[in-house]
Length: 252
Image 1 (cartoon, one colour):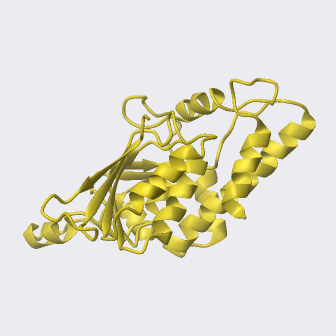
Image 2: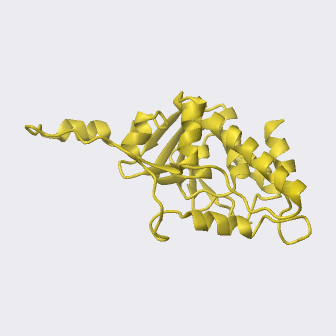
Image 3: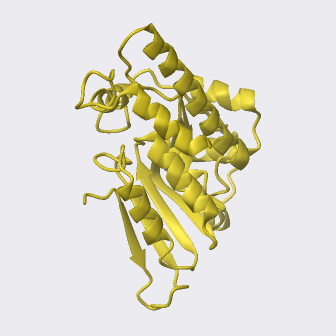
């Protein structure tokens, strides 16, 4: 099975309560999990194979929001302490997973991106209406994760998502989506004061175009969904009815 995650246990302690690290790199559920009941069960089994604290390292452009939502729930339910470290990028669905941490840290050069959920839908008017309903429900579920972590209002988060907002480390901390910036205390101790230094305010940036090799583009998201989602008449892709079933698993 081609997994998009990897567990590493502290070799100095082989007990069940030994600290572990979970690495989420690349696209979440690029070739597994989708429409699959085996992969989520395997992830849960590996998560619950120990009882010690875990550190989740994230460097991901996103992926399947349903997989991300289930991973979020599993991490929130885990009995040990969960620390999340965003060492580069937590975009789209990966940012949802990041919200599961009891403590969320981000690299000074890390970024978070949040946006409205997207899908490619086909079929008759009833199918399209159902697709809109599913997108609305998915957005609400994602907003809940951001609200729980940050304390921001529903309206504020909804607007940030609709604007497809990219946040640097300081802006993410300012908004409460992360708790700390890595190495920040060390930097404060070593920085020399500078006279008349002007304050540089962190900014949330919405970019109209993302170089493919630098960040994650909207087109990449659409292309990924296009290979998976269409009307029920195409057996090679995921019908809207299957999306609806997956949504019901998350909200009930």
